[in-house]
Length: 359
Ligand SMILES: Nc1ncnc2c1ncn2[C@@H]1O[C@H](COP(=O)(O)OS(=O)(=O)O)[C@@H](OP(=O)(O)O)[C@H]1O
Ligand SMILES: [Mg+2]
Ligand SMILES: [Mg+2]
Ligand SMILES: [Mg+2]
Image (tube, rainbow, N blue to C red; front, side, top):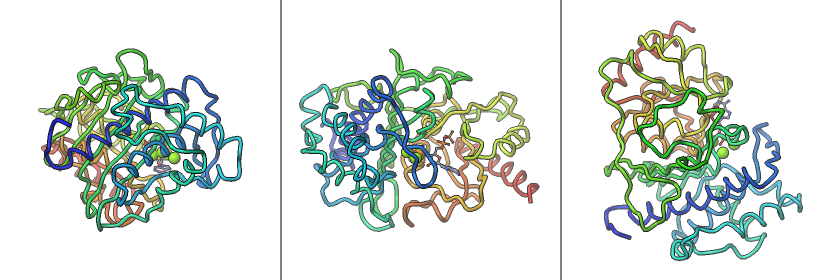
């Protein structure tokens, strides 16, 4: 550890935990049948989601035993499916960081398959605005992961409801912060040479990126910041791939109102937040499709902080900051509008015009 600034130990462990979990997800993509299991909300989950969650929680439990954890997945299905459990255990016990000291810092291996299941289930905190709570999305953008597009391994630490540390591992994004966003980045991601980036931020300390494959000896990373755009007409906006997750039609109308001429870049996961934070894109719009859907805290905690620390503003469609302190969901918010701080009011005004016209 090179620095003793606030949350430096949490940042260090979070980065290593995300790096290790990303090794597992990449192995699943390349080595294993990725077959999905349907969750009760009809969304897909893979052995990668369960395995990555187990590894991250093991690292947190070893280092911060008293902290609460909110994580997306639960082990119930694995307890009744021996085969599935064993496949995941096989992956989890054989996934390690190359650097022995880093692996040691995470507490090393999980004891056995039953301990793995118990760890997965320790992500069941109800959240809230008291004390230290980690938010984990082991694979965000599971559909992107399956199609070889974008996905992210996401970890955030909230203290009294405020996000203090955020880390995003994006195995299929270019390492180069300046690489323009390819139009097909959401369907044609790759983790070949030159890909894999780790975004990080600590509240009040800025945001950084570094290669996901970097060893822990290369601490730090490059500072990243949002692009300062003179005219919104030149902006690039990012949105979900799934039309059911955000309203593509409304988003196109908003872009048109802002004079944006470039087509949107569609990609899954919090890779959208990372991409705008480093100026590869400029705006992330997520307008609600279903009025009843509540966004989950693990889908936004790390990205929200990384964008704000890179000079952006993140609100919901009503202009309110995302409220991470009321439970597992963002029940007080609807949608997401993320933009450079100086342009956010203008973007929000266009969002509201389009939404008002909708009613
Ligand atoms: N109906 C609805 N509306 C909004 N959001 C939803 C909805 N259903 C699911 N989800 C969550 O969306 C997460 C992935 O969304 P993304 O925008 O990142 O990617 S995508 O292009 O839409 O797949 C996805 O995260 P993962 O489950 O981690 O992949 C879900 O938590
Ligand atoms: Mg999911
Ligand atoms: Mg998610
Ligand atoms: Mg997920």
